[in-house]
Length: 403
Image 1 (cartoon, rainbow, N blue to C red):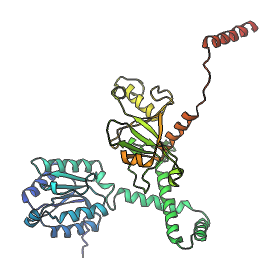
Image 2 (image 1 turned 180 degrees about the horizontal axis):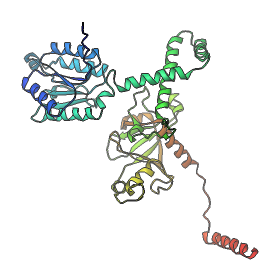
Image 3 (image 1 turned 90 degrees about the horizontal axis):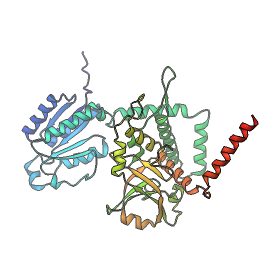
Image 4 (image 1 turned 60 degrees about the vertical axis):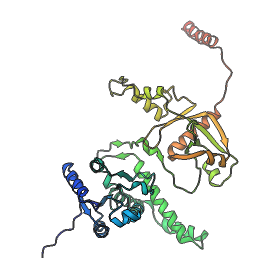
C-alpha cells in the first residue's frame, strides 16, 4: 500500500465569509506567485478545523482574519475571531492581518507590530498580499513560526552548548552547589541556572566570529537595530533605558545609574544624560554622496556614519563628549551628551517620561565606559605653545651641532 506523504508546505489561513474577498485573495496569490497554500474558511467552525490541521506539521505562516463572519456578530459586535487572534498571538509567532470593516470596534493589540489592522477597501487585499509576498521572499515567514528556522537553530545550538559546555563531573557539582543552598526550591533554581547557561552559550556562539573551511575568519556584523530591544523585565527603570518626554519639546534621556544600584534599589536619584537629536546638518553629512575612498567606494556620508557608530576618535563630531546612537526603525537615534548630565527622582521620571527603547548590554557598557572616561578626564593649565615649539627647535639645533 502506497503511503501518501503529509503536506509540509507553508500555508496561510483566511477567515472571510464574503466570497468576493476570498476570490480576490486567491487571484492575488496566483498573480503574485506567493508560494504558500491559501486555505479559505467561510465560517468559524471551518477555521477551527483547518487551524488544527495546519498545526500538525507546523505549516501555519500567517493569518488573515475578518472580525465579523455572521449577521449576529455584525449586530452584537462580539466577534469569535477575536478569540482566534488572541490565541495565536499568545501561542504562535506569525503575522496576523485583521482585514475588517469593523476595526473601530476592535481595540486589542493597539501597538503590536505583528498584528496588522487593515480596513476593508478597494486596495486592501492588494496591500495585504504584497506585504505577505515581501515577507515570503525575504524568508521572514519561516523565521519565527512554530518549527521555523529560529526554533531549529536554537535547539541545535542548545544541544551543542549542552554537549560541549560541561566536562567531567561538572554537572553534578553544579547541581550539588545549588541543592546545598536551596533546600526548598532547588529544582526550580537548577532549571533556572542551566537554562541561563544554555541561552548564554547560544548567544555568545552566535555573536562570535566564524571560521570558514579554509580557516578564514568571518567577522559577525550586527544590523544597527540589534543594538536596541524592547525590555520586558520587571524593573521600571534599567541602565540603558531610553525615555521620551511626554512633551515633545524636551530631549530624550538615557538612564546611566549602575545596574547593581537599580537591582538592589540602592540609590537616591537616577543618573541621567540627555540625548541630542539628529539635526539636518548631521543628516546631510550622513547622506553626502561624494566618494571619500576610491578603493572601497565608501562615500563621505558612509564614512561619517561608520566612524560615528564605531566611536572613532577621528570623528570630530562625537569627540570625547558624545556617544552616537544610530537611527533605526525602532529608534530615531541621536548623540548621548555627557555634558548634559543630571539626576531625577524615580517618580518624577515616571510621571513625565515614557520608556521608548533599551540599549543592548554591549552599547550600554560602551556608553558607561566613555561617560566614566569623560568624568575622569584630567585638566592641565594652558601651555604657551610657541615657547614649547622653541624648545623643539633648540633640540634640533643641538642635534645638528653634535653631528
